[in-house]
Length: 268
Image 1 (tube, helix red, strand yellow):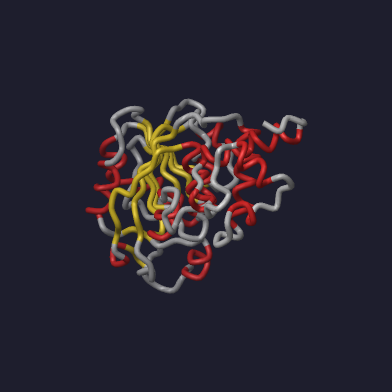
Image 2 (cartoon, helix red, strand yellow):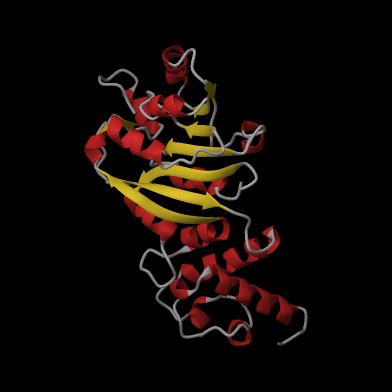
């Protein structure tokens, strides 16, 4: 999170940084990690509040820091520990290369501005990562863990359910950060796993869901803009009167399969 004073603050706010300053919260986050694998990737270490308990517990910690002004101080502070600090951007870096000697766990106070985008990059990579313990804005965390029928359930929850089991471990008061944000944060624990369908099927099913979820108050038969949707819903055994947010990933995969069958000339 950002140092006290005005120098560099506008730039760092553009980077979306609110630095964690509560050591108790940092230790609670680290306690949520498993003993295995004994390697942790930290995204956005900032001034090192979370890094400190990480290097105390784990012999191998790799950190990606976007702000070049923070890399050297981190390297100096944690010299002689198991920390490897890289000046890198988690939104664009090759995660396979970063975790080449994995698997790894991930611990991070994700920047509010890009936290969702980074999480979307991490979740499909069960080949690289096992457990993610990440801090996000509470409202975003609620969208990640939401179940079908809940108010926060939408595309983010469907994507998460494709690749991970998730829970909110605890919430974090704004006073744990500097500068103090205007929102409450939450710490998520995600266990990554292989998806229930092929990448192509997932892409199609999530695309269908995304289109319907833009009209969340309509019955799903009307919210879908796909030709043959009512018949496909019936063939998939789904209620056409339901709202899009009531369908889980399994339902959208069933609908995707029914639509593919219809496109291939099989009405069943």
